Structures are given as structure tokens and as C-alpha cells.
Amino acid sequence: MASSLFLLLPISLVFVIVIGVFFWWAIFSGQFDDTQSRGESILNDNDAPGENLATTEDRDAAKPASLAENGRQREK
Image (cartoon, rainbow, N blue to C red; front, side):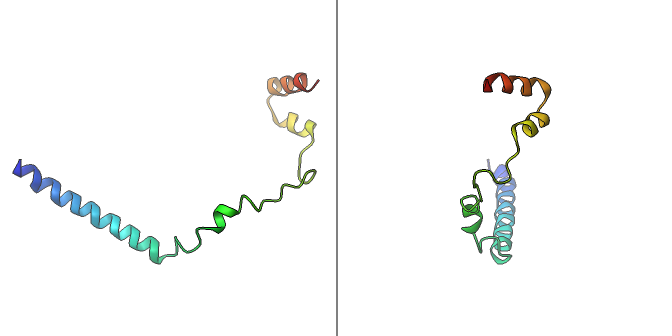
């Protein structure tokens, strides 16, 4: 029992120190400076209808033939 503690305690202390160093680096390198804008960027996306949308033929050309045929059958 005691011999396993002599092995596990130093290993756990090394893990704690490594995690602390990475957390310290993350804080002071600016990883947590702007946490809000990346989450809001998807909400500010330009989703106006008709802009930058491919036509049905362009989308079907990009699909494999079997998927394109199934899509045309469903549209009818």
C-alpha cells in the first residue's frame, strides 16, 4: 500500500503542475480575452435569401449521381 503511494503521489503532483502551467499560459496568452464574439459570430452571419445560394442544378452536380436522382424525384 505504501509503495503505491510513493509512485502515485509524485505522478499526480507532476500532472497538477503540468495542468497549472498550461492554464497559466492560457490565461496570459490571451486565450480567454474575448470569449463572447466567437459565439455570437454565427448569429451575425448574413443569411439573406437569394444571396450566395447555388441553384438546384449546381447542387445536384456536386452530389453523386444516385443522390441527385433521388433529389429530383422528391422535388416532383
